[in-house]
Amino acid sequence: MTASSVAPTAPLSEAAAPSATLERIAERERKYLLQTYSRYPVVLTRGKGVFLYDIEGRKYLDFVSGLGVNALGHGHPRIVKAIREQAARLVHVSNLYYHEYQGLLAEKLCTLAGGSSGDGSSGEKFRAFFSNSGTEAIEGSIKLARLAGHRSGGEAKCRLVALEGSYHGRTFGALSLTGQDKHRKGFEPLLEDVTFVKQNNVEGLRAAVNDNTCAIVLEPIFGEGGIYECSAEFLRECRVLADRHKAALIFDEIQCGLGRTGTIFAFQGFDVTPDIVAIAKPLAAGLPLGAFIAKEEFANAIAPGQHGTTFGGGPLACRVALEFLSIVEEEKLLENVNKVGAYLRDQLEELVKKRALATAVRGRGFIQGIQLEIPARPIVDAGLAEGVLFNSTQDTVVRFLPPFLLQEKHVDKGIRVLKKLLGKKQKPAA
Ligand SMILES: *Cc1c(COP(=O)(O)O)cnc(C)c1O
Figure 1 (tube, rainbow, N blue to C red):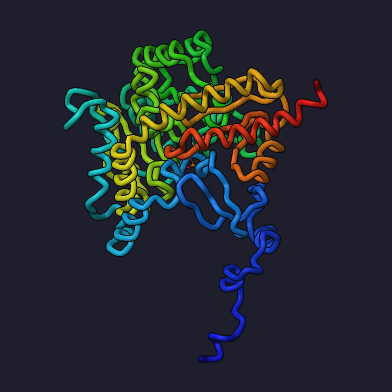
Figure 2: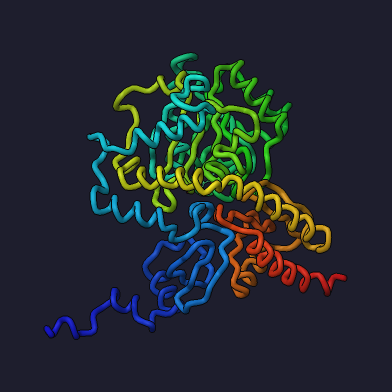
């Protein structure tokens, strides 16, 4: 044995040792990380299916899926196999060269969005661009909408319409579209060409959209904003106005898309087809990958060299995304989302009926939320102690974004814990 192999080496081995406690890990992050996150006090080390395990071996039922990313749960054998195989063959080539998977993934997504089998000829024709994240998919979408707008209406056709309470990401473009002061504050000036409209306010929408509008951008279901759905009437009016004024209707399906609502694209459950759709979170089963897909008449506004990325759409991420989509299909996961999502809905409605502290259920499928009369964070903290991961948003909403594999018995467990937590709180008030 050499001296170096027995010497107590620094951080790496320390992190793997049993003494690597939550406190030590948190202390190191407090010292060395930009302080942007307020994490829950748990160190997760592995996962299997709908369960996660912490550094002490405690087990948690996962209703969060890494914010909607781990739609196949954790450690799905086919995903593990695809990553292993592709990592050994080719991880990255840049967009200077072809690889086998980007075109296949684009074909798959465009066909799914076009609503037709085969080459998409009987439905809408779409084209895809791959990014690394949701916010980048939004950036690309609005850049494309600007190009198309300038082409059809000159320099003045640059204005964007977005919704109050929305969330589209943290880069300057995406942040400019985000209708929440808490995210915007301190970063001004942002893009000045954005008009905000109240969700589902048709009159406000009509007043905001005109010939200088190049895009209307919205989440069909607000995710970070507290699980509020756009009404069918509002979305139809968005479609009419976008057509009338030659603006792009852009759906941000980064959180609600790719199966979470029970259809592969959320817009397919709302009967309105957007011109551009941004997707990301679950696309590559945990690897960073985002995309936007655009109808041909907008897609052809861009020329080689006008947009690009070094990492986006690499062979590893694209191959895994193809595997993700195959698994959703072959394991009939949309059916599961619809079935268990309806069950979750019923159970939450029941909770609202019986617990004064919960007042409303919103959302559908595996993107749902319950509105509380009290701050949600203590409920989430208490859930953690009970071995269930919930998530809160907008202070008073408990949000459910479970893996598509979730079963009724898992819902029962989550509901049991919520009942206990909400019940306890109710007594002093009664
Ligand atoms: C998460 C999210 C984004 C941003 O995606 P990132 O991958 O975090 O950049 C944008 N829009 C919506 C609706 C989201 O939920």
